[in-house]
Image (cartoon, rainbow, N blue to C red; front, side, top):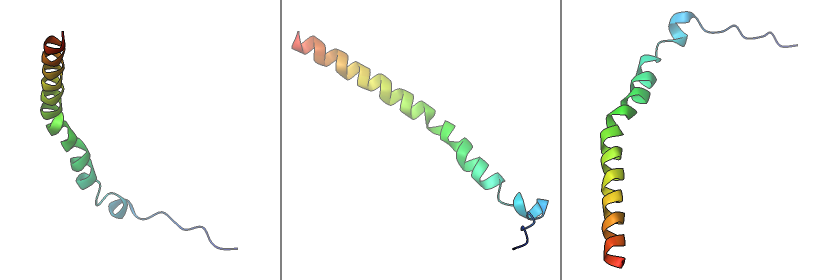
Length: 53
């Protein structure tokens, strides 16, 4: 039987943790852009329905 592998040392396991956390947190920087696009799309739909009616 194979020996179970021991987990890496604490410093090795958490060495790259800030980088993925920063990338994951940076998605919030895109929130204003997406909200603006949603509002603009709503305006276009409203104007389209006005023209259609």
